[in-house]
Amino acid sequence: MRRAVIPTNTTKMTSIFGVIAVAVLFVAPSFASRYLLQILLTIVLYVQLVTAWNILSGFTGYLFLGVAAFYGIAGYAYAIVSLEIPYFVAIPVVGMLCFVISYAIGMVLLRIRGPYFAIASYALVLLFANVVLYYEQTYSRVTGRVVSILPVSTTYTVLLGVAIATIVVAYLIKRSKFGYGLSYIKGNEDLANVVGINVARYKCLAFGISAFFIGMATAAIIPRGGYIDTTVVFAPTISFNTLVMGVVGGLGSIRGGVLSAVLFSLLFELFGTRANPYPLFVFMGVLLMVVIFYFPRGIEGVIARVTSARGEQAS
Image (cartoon, rainbow, N blue to C red; front, top):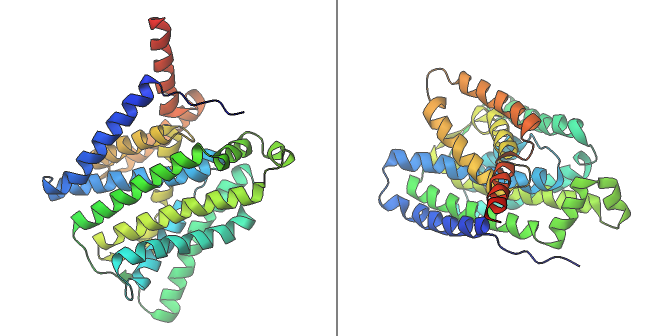
């Protein structure tokens, strides 16, 4: 029998703050400068990517390093389908394409566990990037793709809607029977098999949902630049940044992932846009190791400790 989830003061405050933040973000294009809107666009993108990443990695414990693989697939898929169908139709179409591809790949890839899965998932980025590059250099003789540019306000608003949908779906999954099954897999996959959970199906479905939302976010933001190539959409930093944000936020924590994405996106803007951004990347690598060794639950764990300490003081 499941225990009822009783909202705590922290949960209530998070919900209230979330509603206010969403309202402000939706009206931001009416008062924000173009520069501020670009910063918000980056923040919303990484909030969305980390949340989508958590649906697989956070809920099952499978550390996925291949976010850039589906970001790249979605980018090129959008560049092709947008020639025939409108922007708002292309977004879910690209998302479904990513779902189908990831589900098929997951039936093989998700048989691997532990660090071998992480390595194999990163290999997907290299595989897809080189396949596309080989095709461009050998057959099409054209590098990259040109896409129609849309106003920043449009891509921002649509991406924000996709991000909110991702957060809502991730929350519903976490509280559902499907989410409980994923938590069993994360805790002990062999035991999950024994108690009757269809482990292969659950993992592939989580992988597919994660890729679906990654694909939708990519399709939503691609028209911002007007041009893509393999160095842009298959950039390894996309996978690395998402991984660091997810781990620092706390594996499986939606709230922690959102806070971590906001924090690192601001750091990118402050330090990553300089002539020498590498100190920031070094800092991120060191921080990742520190969190793994000393704060395995990330930001979510810190919030839990603070809340617990306040509760003990109040009693």
